[in-house]
Length: 133
Image (cartoon, rainbow, N blue to C red; front, side, top):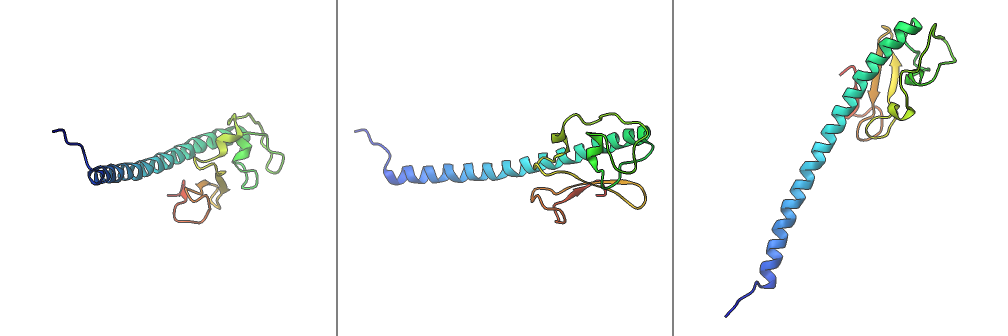
C-alpha cells in the first residue's frame, strides 16, 4: 500500500525551507550593504583624483559652496578657475550608492573632505563614510 506525506510533515518541511531562505536573504542583505560601502569608498577615491586634476587646471580646489558640482559644470562663484574642463560627465555621478548627494567640504588645511551619508541617508550618523576615515 502506497503511503504519502501527511499535512503535518509537509508543514514542517516548508518551515525548515523558510528558515533556510530567511537566513540566506538576511546574509545577502549584508553583502549588498558591504558592496555599497566599498562603492562609496571607491567613488570618493575617484573624486579625490578628479579634484587633484581640477586643482592643477584651476589653481585651487573648489570652495565648499562650489562643491563637487565644480567637476560637472563650470563654477560661477569665487574662486573662479583659471582653466576649467568638465571632469565628471554626469550629475548622477555625484550621488552615492544610496542616491544621496555626496557632501564636499574644503577643510581649514585646504584638504578636500568628501562624505557619504551612508545607508540611513542622513549626514551626522555613525554610518557616514568619509575620506577622513
